[in-house]
Image (cartoon, rainbow, N blue to C red; front, top):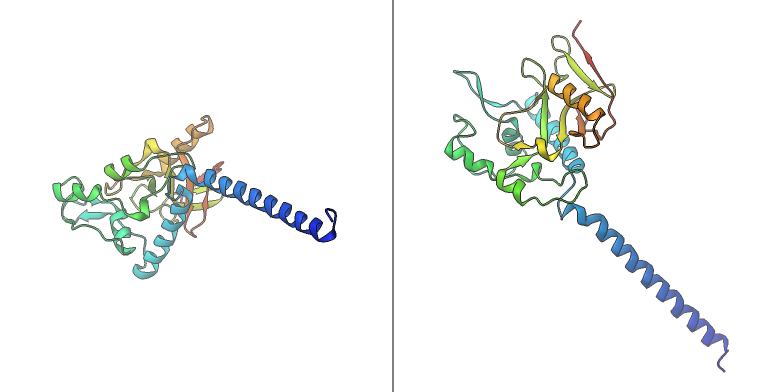
Length: 230
């Protein structure tokens, strides 16, 4: 009776169910450990991809990439292109004055409101974003040629910096290089080259990701080349 085929079958089924329960529990634990480093926030690579999509949509609508908001009388940059892009991405922004600089009292308050487009964990390492949100810091920095235009947008008259044989628009940088998202500051081509050269000899690179015009995002190692217009 104790060795009946039915009892053996029931025992085997129960054993298999136990194995599946244990395996599923281990799978959930694995998923939890993979998600914990991001603290519920998307990693930088994902938001860089989202940024590429936002660039593409903006260019389709306006025929160009977003510029900084400028004072036309002095030609000074007042607010970053990131403000234009967030607004285009239907981010609800508190009221701001596009005729005043980012450090003006009203616009300074805007800096503390970090849109989803610029929120991210850094390089897959455990981070807390509370300080990032309070200061309104972002790792997304544009790459500009000497005249202030985007890298690679005017190859006939401007030098172009290539990473892995392709012109790129934007980089994702390490936490120490983050900037207030409304501040009109980016990297020049020469600054990017300096950072890339420093990163070669460092175990903690400054440039973590490069965003290309086609929306493709890659991490290091990078190869780069500067080409001057003919």
